[in-house]
Image (cartoon, rainbow, N blue to C red; front, side, top):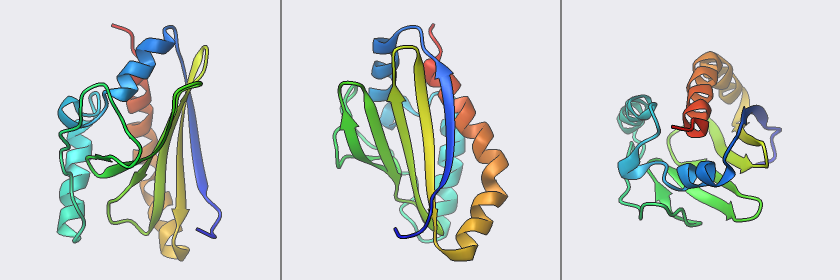
Length: 148
């Protein structure tokens, strides 16, 4: 990836760090994506039509995310315990590479999307879907950090 990434960062207030870490460890698979699952499944259907892997609902162990593990159409690239952070790489068909990362600090969860566009079409794609992505990822972050 020798291209400059397009970075979107969102910050969400956190009251209970361990609760947020647990929610992140349980994301995907049978638990879904906290209110945005239908959007991810729709994207997965489109991916399958384009010859990609689609939304492969994982049977991951609840409460665990392991490096290298497949998680729907993502793959866990990195997971650290203290401070908690996790990075997923999308395996869907895209004109570039995208990573979804979370870091949990004392009073904040930072959700970062890094897209490495493949040429001009990658940039066109990203900026065309950016408004929808902002809404989807904002909702995902809000849903993760909600305390019930």
